[in-house]
Image (cartoon, rainbow, N blue to C red; front, side, top):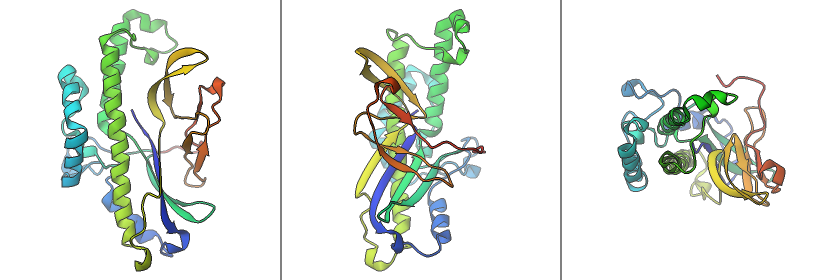
Length: 272
């Protein structure tokens, strides 16, 4: 839930970067937990914080803790312990931190990640609720994983609340990673540009979310999974690969696509 990409345009130019990016890359890797995360053995869990930074805890307490507690009271099996352990972490398999230059050699920083294990747990829970509430009717669907929750039900309202929380977690997660990357980058650029602006332009573009919209004169809940909103002139991000560019795009508002666009350029190889 809430997975997406946030891009920041900086005031740095391509020539401001060090000739070799190896040390910078290693420094970023050290400041952003990444990889598999099970939460079973935190001391060996490279995908989450072994010791939660004060800034992470404050951000979680301010923006996320109260609502997550409410979700847990309504559905204890939908939540995990210490979700803040994953705030500011990247995950896997195709989540990434990217540094790119545009056609004018401006440096952009992109982060692709989502709501991590808390979001996955919520998704798994509501998928099981949908199957349970549909009962035998789920087997009439092309795939039981297409089971759905009735809009008029309490479960649907609970789902929307949980989805909103996960989307907020995901956005804050990307923002925290970007902050850490910018701080590390300052250590590797010349002193004359060390006080560069890290957010000359900011684009946040989720590609795994639900939105209530009107299309073709009908009010709908649009589920975009691996797709971005592309309303007329809406700015979005289409992710590249390790060999392909990422693109900052503007939507065309095409009705037949429900004003949506693919979130990535595609790939020929597995992410594993």
